[in-house]
Image 1 (cartoon, rainbow, N blue to C red):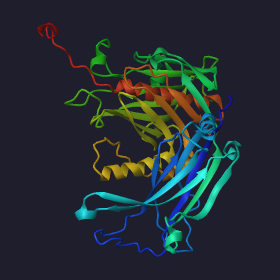
Image 2 (image 1 turned 45 degrees about the vertical axis):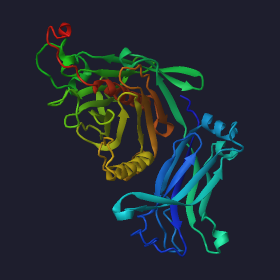
Image 3 (image 1 turned 120 degrees about the vertical axis):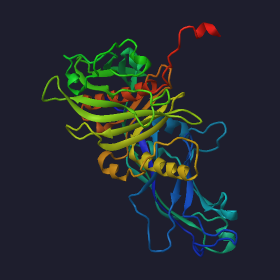
Image 4 (image 1 turned 90 degrees about the horizontal axis):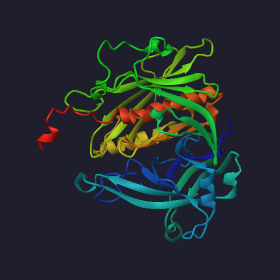
Amino acid sequence: MDPQAFIRLSIGSLGLRIPGTPLTAAKSDIHAFSSSCVCEIRLRGFPVQTTPIPLISSPETNPDSHSIASSFYIEESDLKAMLAPGCFYTSHACLEIVVFTVWKGFHCGVGIKRQQIGTFKLEVGPEWGQGKPVILYNGWIGIGKNRKDSGKPGAELHLRVKLDPDPRYVFQFEDNTKLSPQIVQLQGTIKQPIFSCKFSQDRVSQVDPLSTFWASSGDGVYQDMERRERKGWKVKIHDLSSSAVAAAFITTPFVPSAGCDWVAKSNPGAWLIVRSDACQPESWQPWGKLEAWRARGIRDYVCCHFHLLSEGQEGDGLLMSEILMNAEKGGEFFIDTDRQVREAEAEAEAAAAATPVPSPQSSGDFAALSPVVGGFVVSCRVQGEGKCSKPLVQLAMRHVTCVEDAAIFMALAAAVDLSIEACRPFRRKIRRGTIHSR
């Protein structure tokens, strides 16, 4: 398998010095300076990222050189677009960091006010595409507005901007997961078959090795079961020799919670992700657990929690990802510690502002995952309910030592995709004659 070239642009070691500015009482009607300052990090073609900047009071102190505040993952086509001036651009794209002071609770504790301090710009250049680690900037730089006119020292920003190669394998399911599609590796316009997946919706056969993980659900007729529960779903991933190398199957049925017709957080459905045991043919080892449920608000979301299990473990393991995906439009499931730390912080701010967007209620502490997974691991884009999804999967090359490693992530992607449908609202039973009574 040949990977595609990606680069990781990381911005970290952020700090701000404002010489001669006290950290309290900037204006008479503002009771306190903000808890910190914030910056907007902008790069053409990517969503704006917002992150706090700690204030540095001592001239001798420098921020943590290993901290990462923001990351962008750039593929070859993105870089070409940034290096080629468009009809509305006169120069190459720039990395732009705009710094603001923020005051909260002004005017009797109502509202948020911010004021721009200054801007740091770094032009995108040919060195971005050389595929080598490069430190583009590291140290302090003055960004204060009108610092020359006033004769006073302006604000100074400390940052470290670095490029690292981050090659990825890119895979795509060629059809809806329920149709047992082939999985191909994408290399530009070339599609290379690499896996096949087999979906089944029946109860697990007693001769199937996966039956050792399956708890018997008792007797009953299966044909009407879909109206009140979704279970027995299973996806096996096969390599080119038709050997099953990974699988995902429902262990906790997706059932409507009491008083509603959807899968709620109080009783989520769950998948067990397993991989084949190289030492024992036809046997499986638990690898991960995916829980999913539906959150209802202004929009409906499907919430996914993924835990990585230690060898032989089947209970709760290490939390690796908490994702909200739009039930109608779909979204992206990912494991990326840098991004999760950033989004957990944004989620905490949103919760403080009492936004109506449902939250998976993350602990916000993903820092412990960094030594385990190290930044980006995998992403999977899926469509919303009722649409042909064809999941698109990107997988960091450093996490793949053999084809079987990639297969386990395909099983996880299949489970994420199927969870969108498994979490759709259940149909209520319609009494006879109701349809014709209108």
